Length: 226
Image (cartoon, rainbow, N blue to C red):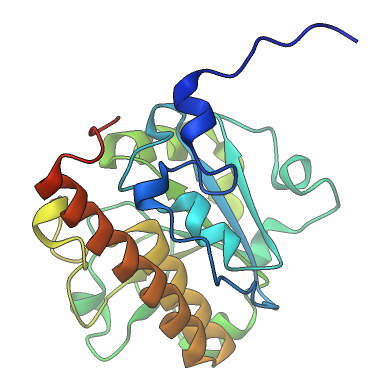
């Protein structure tokens, strides 16, 4: 057994679950949902511990979810620690495609490698066993995409949310259809599992976080971190 360095004062002040300062922690009252479709969030290392980040908060809402921090992994099987077929997993695609142009009536559109909406959308969506979200800035998420070639075997989905991100002025998204990691997970799992209560629960937590962030910025109660 080796000696471990004492945690910093900042680390001691953070919630051990969501890694946010007490003023921003909304973990209390979260009851993990028994989701059927597995969720994996791959987070770029430089996206860690941001006050407005939602990756850890998202994972806390599900019984079957993983958060992995890094730049590359050799395979989906290595991430899960068990055999997995990436062809039955979907990753939110980062290209220039927009769901509103492909299928305006749909919030989730499965696309081919050529950028076209696949035929039999409902059938394709029913084949999804797990979802992969890339967490970070736009450039960080693209770096994760290019460094993990096994994702090319996954299904690709693009999102067409009916409303913009709730971040509002707190964090500007690079695209009008951009969502926080939590919002993307809420939309995907609620629709794929046919359980609107999933989106309701996650949205409630997100609204609480945003309210606390706005209050903290007004009072100067927390420092903005990257």
